[in-house]
Length: 119
Image (cartoon, rainbow, N blue to C red; front, side):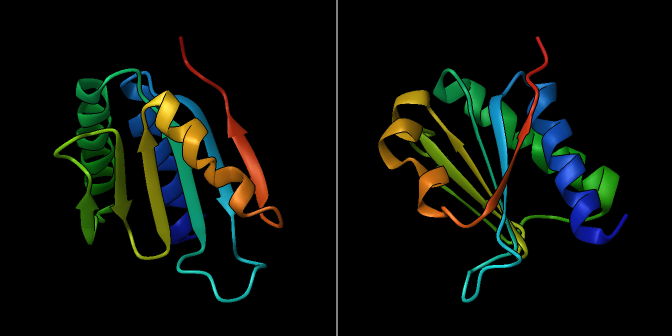
């Protein structure tokens, strides 16, 4: 498992640990001129759950892959939080904000992988 795959696994585990929903990994590696190699997109039901998901991802990636995010933006409102891991960008949305921005369709050429929800 390479470093990006390990990071993606730990991010997904962090999201699932706090009951984040509708996890999608967009593989951008075959698309030219992208800001990263992967997008991870998910949602939480409230700003407080989004904050918990961010903390869980941060802990899972630090402990499981020894990687910290370069930057985290959006925590003040916690409607859309972006976590920058250089090769991987994580986007955690409230459902209505996710629907509005619809990031999955921006990368129509990307290979999308859905990660099952854990209930």
